[in-house]
Image (tube, rainbow, N blue to C red):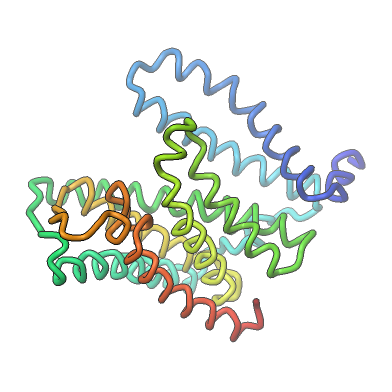
Length: 275
């Protein structure tokens, strides 16, 4: 219908607003009863977030058909079921995991932390893997898929790159003001990570495999270390070096390690003629 195709001519802030309001309108009537009836807050969150992502996928399909006349919009985001994309996921996962373990290992060599043992074992590894793949897949499809695509329809590749990274970083601060102020040192790391993930996509012919894998690898390795309580900081250096609130993205060393990956991904992206 013409009324829907007219949305494609709206400026990008308005298009994003229409999409998000539409998503909330179909999500809230189903999510509210879950929050009211399910007493376990963690289970309620898992169920409602799963519902939200499922409805996001359905809305993207409708959005492609009615707004852009593109029936396979998700494929244009870079989510394709090819062998190469699968290899990209595995490669990115390995890079993300090595980055995290390498960072903590280096800090251990410097005497800034000590390693312990976890009693959870295989259970921890599998739980972390499920969480990492779920979050990595969902966030990359949203931020490096849907959002980046919408931005690139109106803005240059360079502007889209930075806007996507900034919005990605800010989205992690949708929390009470006191908590936002307490965790603000995480923002530079999240911004840098957002840039890396766009460059990762662009460096691999706009496939989502590498950013999904890299993102999941970071989450999985940190999940094992953090939830498994594998490290204990010695306190020999201040938290702004190792990471405020035990978050390596909020520390100087984490930024240096991410910076090395960012430099590499940026170079690879420029080989493909991207900014």
